[in-house]
Length: 252
Image (cartoon, rainbow, N blue to C red; front, side, top):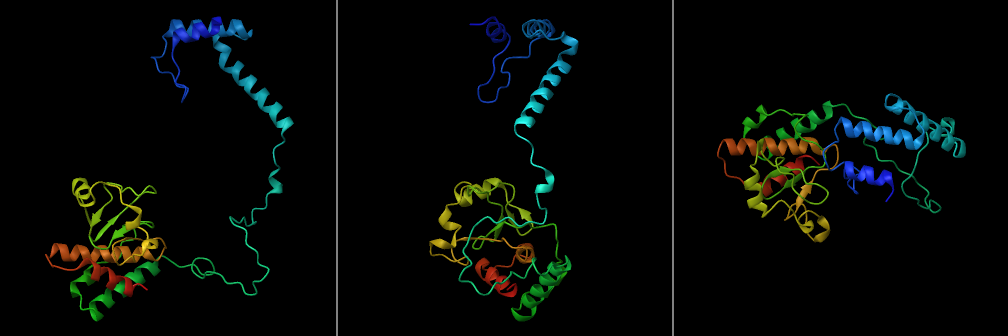
């Protein structure tokens, strides 16, 4: 074993995974001794100039690398270029179309309020929902894209990419459902894929959880939560599946 390895091995232990010191940091005597040893081995300066010494060597190494591998000039990149993720042959395609929403057309924030108010009023006038629902207004800060809604349990929640319910994000109306209740309902926090995907022969109106992905689903999530909140606060019995269908129809 070299003197350097023996000396450093006696001062601290390093994690192979992270390279971080596992033992307590050595005190001033050990630190000063290490710097003196490093200075003697490298022929570099003393403790006071060690930081500048290492910085100078780093800069010199970086300049050498840049000389070997020149940096790509910024003027070679076109800021207006379009980069595709997939390649497709357009040889036999004669007509091209564009998605209208948020590509050819941009909408103001007032659109979500309009969708919410229109769907809410249609529930009242065409489906005979309580007129008191008019007291609910659209809250742009309540929901975000990507949330899941349990059609049968009337719960809005966040589920991660590994199909785990994020505890603390489950809402019934506008009330947070306790973690213990969520775990009891779902026998844990993991949701099987077949309960979340429509590719298993089930529709979003059946035994699956509906995910709201597009920007127009924000008013729909908010309206569902508003109606759930009203029914719960007024002890009104209702069927969550029918509520989901009614709101979905009014938002399409």
